[in-house]
Length: 221
Image (tube, rainbow, N blue to C red):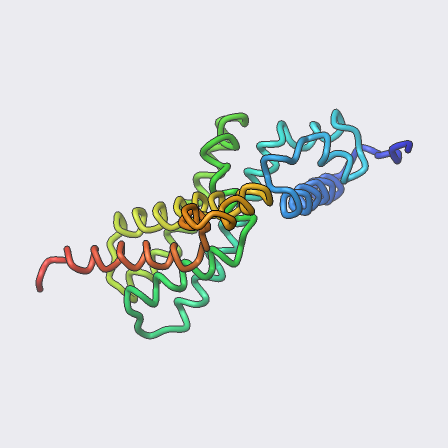
């Protein structure tokens, strides 16, 4: 099948629209296959352009997925902050539950969270990494304002909690999605039952323990 002709975007608006189409294609493929199995050629074919043309908009496949990770941070942060803002008070267990629920509801974001430090940040420019890190810091600061209001967490505690929550979410998602053959093995042998992981309940337990530990270590007024 002949690839459709794909004209280069000339205006800023056309370039932005083209970049959006590329990101949408990568998101669709990532949701269906998992991030590791999506190549730059796959993304170009999904959009209907040659790989060399796609490289005019993004330097590497990793930059595409790093941008999607930044978008995921903004979307997750907004959803979590809306849940937190609706409460005048909350216990550590309730906050842990909200963190776990909003993360596990975003499986592709969890996949991206695992891939970002492993490879997405390692095949892009330093400026791309800087931009991505500043997005995450901004979103953590916004979340932190709500966590300080509800639980009195300090800036460092918020950073530790965010790193624990997102790091665990990424790791648990990878464990929870081993592929059909491996999953069948786990479920067929009772001795391997511990390897079958559900992301939300385990993440909720870990984060509850983390927040209760902070509460226990807090100095007595």
